Length: 360
Image (cartoon, rainbow, N blue to C red; front, side, top):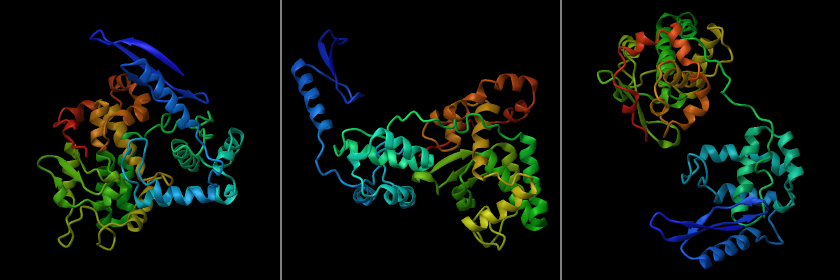
């Protein structure tokens, strides 16, 4: 714990108090009086060290956490209620913890046990467990989070992934013609290109309706989206041409439809997509990879800013774009100079810019 004396711009004196408990730094605050700073240090130490002799058992706290801790406290969704799908995912992720350690109290978990659990459980479950213990720590039920900062070996995610060349994307789209026939195949050929150059998630793709598409303005509005944040993306000129050639069904408002002529659902979407990727020689390609292809295309190939590429994907800002695709940007100029991805042909007609997308 420390108190630092500082001089403000107006010449007045301020005291910054930075508490530290059990080797962990807590939020610092600045006060006008040294006595107030010392009081803050004392309150924070007492609060963080408070722990009851009857800390709840895992089997008792998990259902309470799922029911009572329904607002996200961290990350990009901080302050937002968790939806039912997220709660179901959390319940599934914590089932093994309850089965294996349900009788242990929260304060009986130490770092060695946390490391053993981390080695046995997949990362997706470990994230949920860490969040559960973080909330217990914030509420004073335990004196530290044993799952915090374990320094485990982890994957770099998509940082080293190589996206498919643009020519391979078009071959994949063309594979829909043979996989799904002359009547249904053309719709999915357009759908694959639309997903790659516009970047919607699968649920947004399935729910898209013609009133959401403005071909003259070259924009598309996605209403059914993750986190309930509708946004507007741009349509590159060649995507507009593809949509204009797409046959419309008079009995449906949907832009893309199922083999039986109904609105796309999760099952009918996967049925058709699986046939397309099998025929295209990419049996393990997830539909969501087309969204990542779009982010890479806008940020690396076309050279838009992280904020602009993020707006195209409905992100709040460009941080995730930089984290995911920043490695590819470093070599973009050399690739563009070699002309390997024909950027000039696309960018010469590319208006309006991606910043016109609305991010909810």
